Image 1 (cartoon, helix red, strand yellow):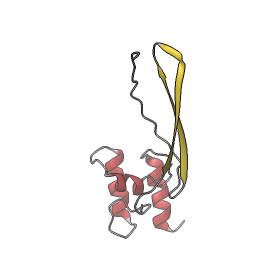
Image 2 (cartoon, one colour; image 1 turned 60 degrees about the vertical axis):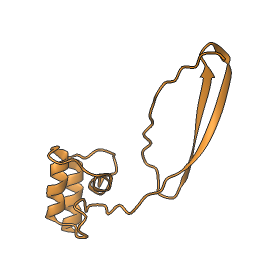
Image 3 (cartoon, rainbow, N blue to C red; image 1 turned 90 degrees about the vertical axis):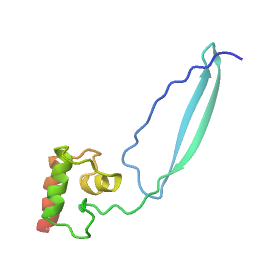
Length: 111
């Protein structure tokens, strides 16, 4: 056997939709023999639980307490769980920012 080299890498996909399938292709190759490569395709279904957008404290009500909770996450005073992160990321940009607070305020004010 020829030597194999493994490169650990991760891939963060954004804007995936619940219930949809996504196909990813990986290509492996032997280090000492570039002519031999093995493409592998995997089919992934994105699934998950409910994400109550705008309700990171998970009490079923969107109010000022959710703004406070989101602010704690932004200031890194508290570490969100995946569900809390999903709920606090109101603008779906995969980052908790002041923009999420503004949109959350709009939701609370009915705008």
